[in-house]
Image (cartoon, rainbow, N blue to C red; front, side, top):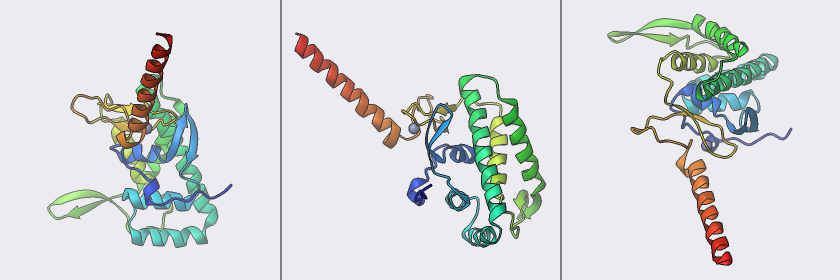
Length: 215
Ligand SMILES: [Zn+2]
């Protein structure tokens, strides 16, 4: 398979939560089928993690070296990331559709949550105590920990009524609608919102032409 070129411009952070942006690391979806996957290998996962702010540049360099020396492990983590993304997508989709959450997806996220929580460390930050990760860790899956915790936080937050799925054709991105009147339909007005506007304009134009011809 040809390597898809990725750079900072390919990553968009419009979900409003880390876990939603992670689910949105695809070009789009038709039902649950991924179209134009942006995560093709572990290095893509690392790049997304850097732009998402879950690993910093020195960590990226360290993880890159470690992934090169342990290709199989990196591949395995990548497989876990894709499986986690699929499970999260289906859980969020079940919220949006008001359907049952698949048990296999709940199990998978529960497993990843256990893995993540083991890595948490209580630290002192000034006057406060905070949860932190082991900074020196070479763990190749470290970007999955905050993603999983973000999903667990969102899913257990109690109010999921603002969770939306973009209405764009073959998009399927997820986001939190934080607009005051809960009227956000699109992942991005410049993208799906604009396409919908153009398509509505075209439809109206065709209708008025048909009416003019039949008059
Ligand atoms: Zn969209």
